[in-house]
Image (cartoon, rainbow, N blue to C red; front, side, top):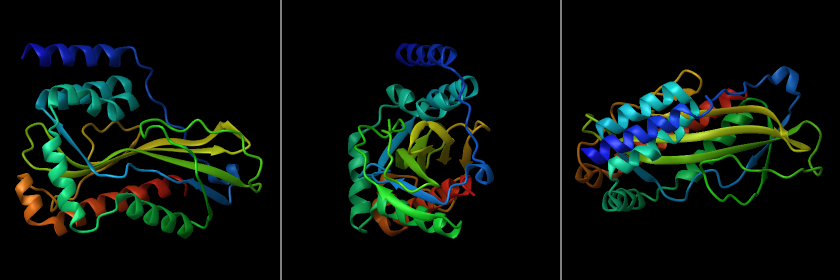
Length: 250
């Protein structure tokens, strides 16, 4: 109990000194962008897990209320101190998904590119070394792209299955950061926002997507018994997240 109280107090103290997150909305008419150059390597190679205790949920909610983005993106990670995520559970979920040939990044990328094309954009790709998925890339100046181009960096902080607080069921989750910047001047940000599928907290400054209730598993054994449904649920979460990212650019 003492460990949990100390962890919660530390996280809330951190939240109090973090600048609240303010998204940068996209104005398509004034931006004049015709081509979206998507950064490859948007998501980690493997699905993950988040297992948050009830006080972890409360901590994340409090952080989100006071610190905006910090509460949503790092709250779950900070809460993991008291959540005690078990690597064995993650490995079992990954193994179940692997039996279905699951490829989270391929699913997300295909959905995102399809949605952007449907919005009338020309598409391109660029490879930039990504050291972590929790922060946007530090992009270098690029003068080799056509006028009217912008670089889209989607940083997938995590995706997979999570178990939160008093909720006794594992459900899909996806968390991504979204930034659209000028290649000739990366400090010029056309868009900055976050999309969270099955959020722990729901601050109104970001895009929150509710989970589909049909994809809920009481035990890891239930995921292992029906890996096709587990894949279907996480695939739906990734596609809905990708579509929401594209909607930010519409």
